[in-house]
Amino acid sequence: MNQDELKKAAAHAALDYVEDGMIVGVGTGSTVNHFIDGLADMRGRIAGAVSSSDASARRLEGYGIPLIDLNGVTELQLYVDGADEIDGGFAMIKGGGGALTREKIVAAVAERFVCICDQSKLVSCLGAFPLPVEVIPMARAYVERRLARIGGRPVLREGFVTDNGNLILDVHGLRIPEPQALETEINQITGVVTNGLFALRGADLLLLATPTGVERRV
Ligand code: 5RP
Image 1: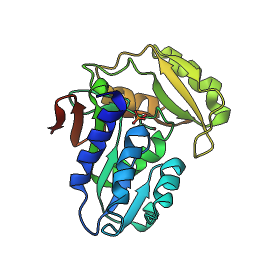
Image 2 (image 1 turned 45 degrees about the horizontal axis):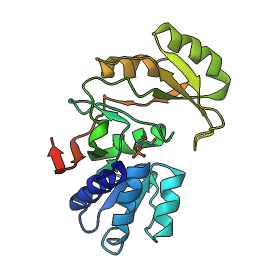
Image 3 (image 1 turned 120 degrees about the vertical axis):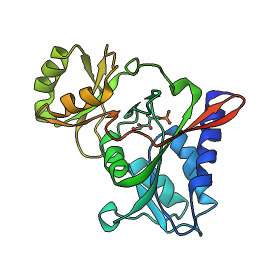
Image 4 (image 1 turned 45 degrees about the vertical axis):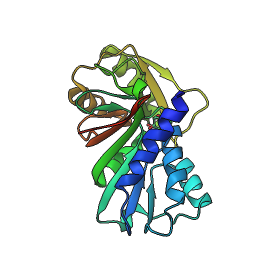
């Protein structure tokens, strides 16, 4: 199986967690695109979806799945999203697609975060994947200096603007044995909207696709 087939297997395994009448929180990325494709077959059975990005919203709309504003939702049972890296404690690096802030907001509301990944995303220590940080444009240079002080090498994601109108700095060279502490520290920098560490609110369940099947890890 190639990587895309593994992503599809993990995504389709997540459909088992979608119940009739549910509002489903939907993440962003190529793995989630497979989940949305599968959700299309269930569209008459769910109430709708809360999307974490304009890209996922467009795909959901294309299938006629009703989009629901998060502000109108008091309870969101399920959020399904991918990750760029996930460790054994289910802390993640996310934001490879630049949707980290909205992803973090939807994840915060959700009761259950189901992470869907191919096996290449599981790591013993986070940090090989550059950590995305969403930044208010006028604070870019200041935030770069602060990130350098904590040992990272921030690189501006060229030609990219987030759905919120901000910039992304991809921070290279970090090794992250304590993701909760670093998530908190980076979020304290003035001008940072949020960073792509999902450790304070990690995943609850990992559906990890391997060539021999999808492992369900809790
Ligand atoms: C987007 C994300 C994605 O979940 C992450 O980048 C994984 O993407 P893919 O499923 O394409 O490998 O955080 O902001």
